[in-house]
Length: 150
Image (cartoon, rainbow, N blue to C red):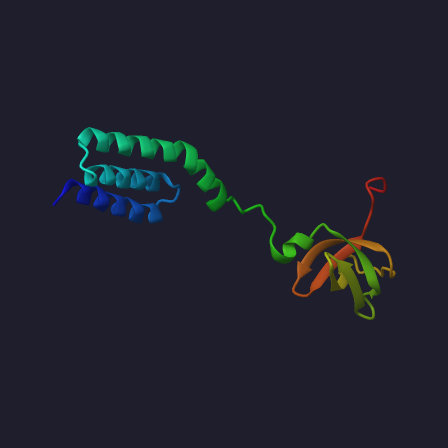
């Protein structure tokens, strides 16, 4: 078996291990192994292989890895998605919110939602409201207060 075969096998093993240990560390070394395999395939000696492995691995680790981590491994725990984005938004009452008659609609986030008042109070049409939570197809709202009113 030629030396470049060994480098390719090492690269494959490192790529497989990268699947189980995310962070793009082992992938940097795997690509470095492929560079070393190329050096042997071209008939260059061991010194060139080690140099190619080292230079490519270090360059990827310090230059490419931060970019890959930034785009692939985002910390999404604090990011709001789907309807959670509506919480905290201000909307306009489109149909009077009346807890007795179970009516009420609000325009918020570009959509019209069935609305319920969080404190079971009636809110007139045209008033501003703040979304406090979303459950299914309903938004739970409270009358909007400006910072001066708080």
